[in-house]
Length: 338
Image 1 (spheres, rainbow, N blue to C red):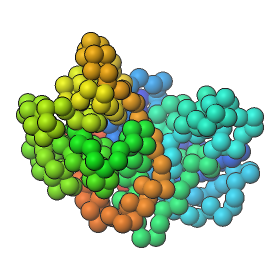
Image 2 (cartoon, one colour):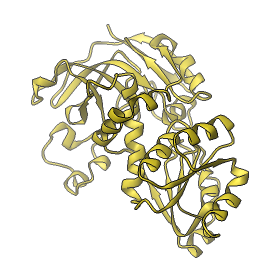
Image 3 (cartoon, one colour):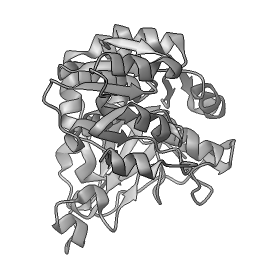
């Protein structure tokens, strides 16, 4: 019987056997190889992002397709893959489509489940079931461990799909941690100047190594960004702090008619929002989450050696409890399932 790491109450993981999965209509079963831990997993683990328990977390993963359901191409069997997190009408090839899928908004499908997060067991397990339409084959030149970064890298790319840039902008990334460092990296690839803001000196130094133009602490950020934008502020501020009040600092750094892109999904509300500042400066607020996997995999192919160094440690499935605790302090912890 396959093992799962099940969240039974906030802060408590139990390793247990589970019945073998069977692929349903439009579905595949993946034998999981590696599963990364992100900020959303930590919010689930700590109970800040409440979901019905027991629950299996994990949505950044790679593995091998071991079984396909009806209406799924059998050529997927045996392929090494990763998967998008939204199991939608389109991903299951269902008819009729819900209104969101008909309008071209599949990531907001009214019938969707979200692997490892919403009404769908995740990849902290030896097996996971997902909709076949979520699959992406991992290129041979990218090892499956590093490919666990495909999902957060896609989310980093989505930042700039939702808030397009030309390459002439100056942007701020608040919190260059697990996701934020990928936002820094993608922004640099697009040719913009980046200020990375963190209280952690090691994260500041890493952001500079990944191409940021400047890096500083939150206390220094406002003076530094104003100095380098003729007093205006950043064109775009990306909040990846994981702190619900990151938006408060973002509003201090963005220029009039600039954009604050919100990437934090900690499950907690912001304690306050300066609506006067928001309105008077005509600031755009843009939420952003899941993104395109194929461009993310292309970046991994080209920059594999650089990005693999973001993974700071690996743990076994049996050690998932400690892995989640360590992930609160480390950059990127990956659970090795096999």
